[in-house]
Image 1: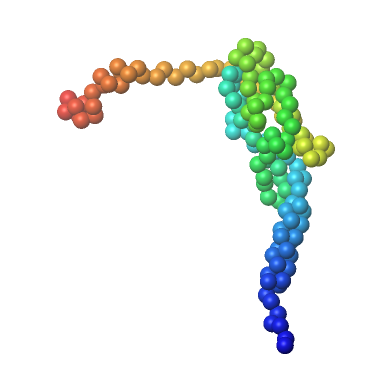
Image 2 (image 1 turned 135 degrees about the horizontal axis):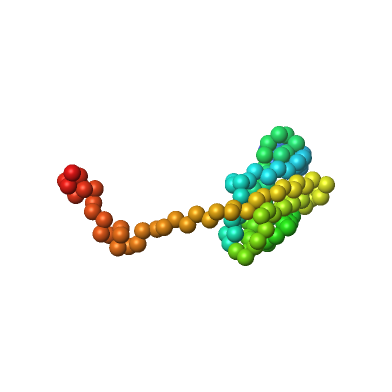
Length: 143
């Protein structure tokens, strides 16, 4: 008596083939270069300044990079993840930041970022100022 061929080995083979192709494709895309794409033109003291670094892949696509892929150093302050924190007592006018790709240290970038000089202190309204302000409807009636 002849046995019917089972489809299970074919399904396993197709699944294994797809996993292999996905693995090869994923490995083929490597970071060719890195770039700083900063959200601001200056750093503020006493806050977390996010340092955005993107990697350009061999297929031309961009990949955001974090401290898992990048080693960050700076001429002042300390890094917490991708954020550079400068002490409020820092007196310099600029900081040099260096980003080095961990899995290929030949790929790195350095940039100089200036410190924000004028601190704008926004005066927030007090609870009394907000609560005792006439509503729009009553202001219209006054006019």
